Image 1 (cartoon, rainbow, N blue to C red):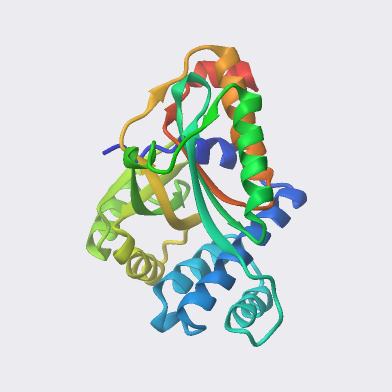
Image 2: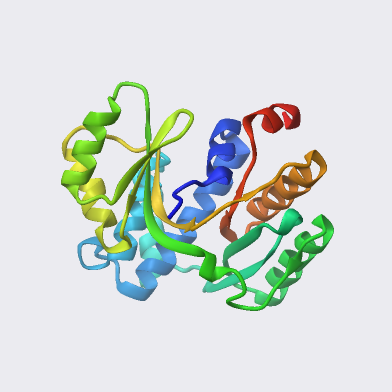
Length: 249
């Protein structure tokens, strides 16, 4: 299995300005709200809510925002009712794309998602057309600075992780979804803080995108999807060489 996630790496390199951070908070609040609605407001008895809170804390979301989102989910505060829908399709270069959405208007959402795929030269497919190419995993990103790879590997495996993978400026720790919360908590007890943490869809294999035009179209598709307010997460099974990425910058 490949733990590689090029899109996550690219997003981190670009950084998050205030506008992007606002969108990230909006998506995290939606996840916390629906997790609390489905499983209750106590994170100790609601693994999905606990995972959502961990992800929110990794983005430095204020505690008040988290508490309000939980109360909206439990009905203690008024809030929109969201529906979760997963869209699947192919982007430029035959890259498989999974789009996790949370919406209060599915007609609007599917129209937007279909438009972005068509505009890029890709196509929105039927349910199940690409989902089998991904594995659901807990993913914990740790900054390389200040920690030794061997030390992190020992701590992560002892905490219950499956594997540790090296990326440009971070290490990616992979877990089974059911073990995610415990691994994060055990790492934190040992002083290991994450820069990003959550349940993700990890591609089993990747498609090498070699043409500059194709790469630009693909990245534009992923950016358009990420910028949509109804889209929670986007996953894609591609790789782009560092040399080509420099040309795209």
